[in-house]
Image (cartoon, rainbow, N blue to C red):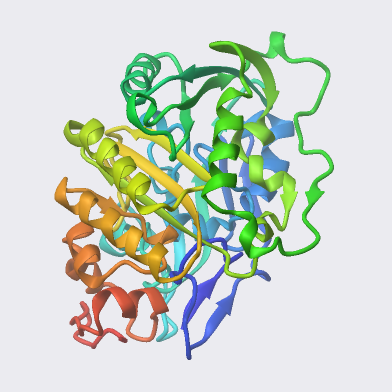
Length: 415
């Protein structure tokens, strides 16, 4: 069996082929909220959007957030999600103080750093494999309003990206860049760098900052629509959409953090075959070299990504055993799925990442090999000792190769 939230993982980490999924949508109640400290206790099926609706009017915000608010609190813990402020706030799991975990034998355990600590660390980033989170307690952060003071900077190549990123770390909480994955030569890695901070109250106009009406893609796009020509044109248009080097604006939080949430069924842009995402991280000392090599591999493949995001992770440590973020540079790319040639490209990219001692993100993965997983998370066998013997997922069976691991109780982990 496997807990299931909103199913926003891009691969099979939230799937359990031939097994049972535990729908957490009924676990959607707030239990308590201390408006003085920002400590929130809620059931695991509460979404990040629900938390924002509760917190923002009271001056509280998520400590960190992924690129969609349509994620449950349980899912955010299970994947130990990260956001644009990793260099400041680390991962979501770092702000979890405790939770209650239901094991398959009926045991209900309170887990925190000081109580059932190993299970606490295994569950954060544990992909739902240690049991069912019933409720969790998290620390929100105090903010002055729902707006972001944002600066956008057009940069010409990877070297300039690293210069801007290094310059931004101390002054800006939120940093990331959209990059043109198809640009080559001296323009390789060019893009738009976005950085920002929560706006001071005196700068906030009389608006709520809450999301407005959403667009909708009503049908699947034809498969031929996304090809190298159209992808090149799209990436070029995004790059030149900002005609001047720098712009500064006050923007609501929603389009800054969750641009794709404003489009219903945005995945239909990719047609019936959909897309696959490749997200990696490489150590900081190899960041520039590895990114150049990855872009060269993409260029030589004839494939292209509609969306590519580049940013630096900081050194804020997470308590999670299988946490993906670590100090270094992370690149996420969405490729239209075109069968074997796309899978071949992703395998070649894995080779580059492994060459530089990097890792692949399980929450975004649909096809990495057991060898790649083992290299990305060399401590996974230690983690597996805490897997509930009746919990499993399609992802887990794929990347562990069906290997049995003895858990702490002496039982065998399900494979």
